[in-house]
Length: 399
Image 1 (cartoon, one colour):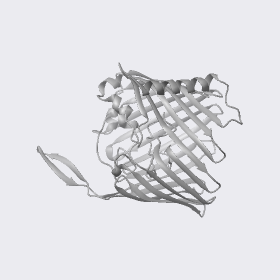
Image 2 (tube, one colour):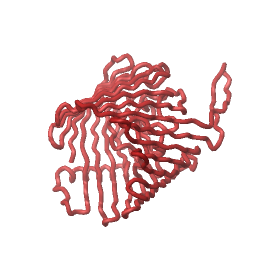
Image 3 (cartoon, one colour):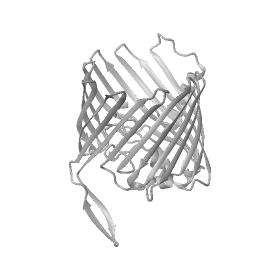
Image 4 (tube, helix red, strand yellow):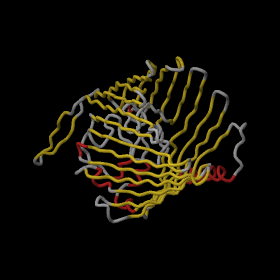
């Protein structure tokens, strides 16, 4: 019954958002969103055996300005997915229905015959603000990351660089309090409770500016680990220079199980690890924006996992499928309505690589076409070896 109710509510909001008269500028209500159709072609690890997949993606963003100081925000997405791979993964319904938040707001309302229908709310929060204070409670995005690809400072909401169809990124159930000391400095405290106390996250962040650099320091509790770190963003010459690092330490000694000659052995693992990412970005005279980013992932553990997990967010203390990663990306606007880009990632210690070209074309003011390719190479006994390649096109109507 709850699935049917959710679908009816979201369908009604979508219909109103597209066909009804929009809220006026003086209305306390605002409804925005988009509908996207994205057919694709999936290739196996030998770049053969093409398989068709398809996605209808609808997003709704609703805001109610209750007063000048208080507002309510509700945002979510509906997805109808077709993929031949769904038949090969037992428990695929549970995979999509999983919600790690304190409140379960993810529902699979269709499953079977290669189809998955999924609805989730990734924003549901109240905002209160004054000139120097911000308080937000509920499911929200707490973005402490600085870099383009890897964000070890992002204790609450890491995201997957490979999930290009989720620009909004995940949210967390949390209480966040921000105090702006000046226009260049602030203090922020956030707590994200969990069903199991060992999975909760609580941390503080202090931001200030010195000599043209924005500096942040963070410290807190991350899933039964101590987390201490910081980051920076500024310029060296004409190039942007930014980075972030976090040191994690187990509050309790952890063990790992290994198999040797049919004998199970328990071994202690390192209680501490460092994750560090830094990069440069530069706008060239011809309009090309380039980025290079280096990652050291001290928490890397070799674990092939399932191919479908490649687009799932990883933990900030083990943020990549390798110990080292080098990413180069470039974006160029060929005209006001046509742009393109290319991202290349090398994972040298696992002998894997990733290539993502894309092309964007503005058909009309609210209608956009996009092509994205994702090609995974190498990486014996890693998730990249099985990922193969995907070619996707999409048509996105925004309202």
